[in-house]
Image (cartoon, rainbow, N blue to C red; front, side, top):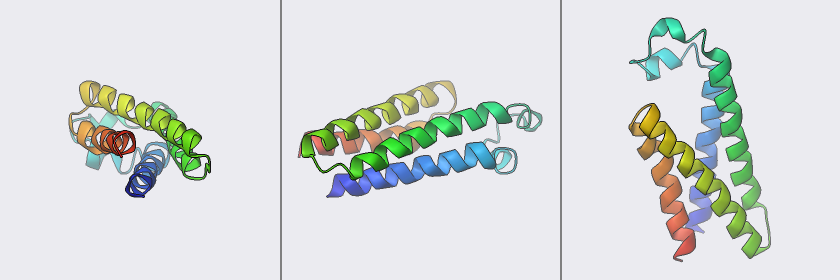
Length: 118
């Protein structure tokens, strides 16, 4: 049950990322990414929206996994999407900002461990 709550939390995070990157990039972005030059938010708006769309797909996959009744399929789908979240978070941590590791990768890795070792 704990891993389902964590999956729901991670899905919620990615729905927030979708909202932020697709709809609030130019308004909230400069407040969150202070090191990123302010004048680049508008020109990078399409790129951010594309990233938001991918985050929406990750959220959709995680939410879908919560509705699968077959335990084996639910486990496999959950692990696949949590793995995708982990890899995306690792890439973001190395290429953008280290705190992405703690916000995105760690919850996914903890949930993967709970699924595999419980």
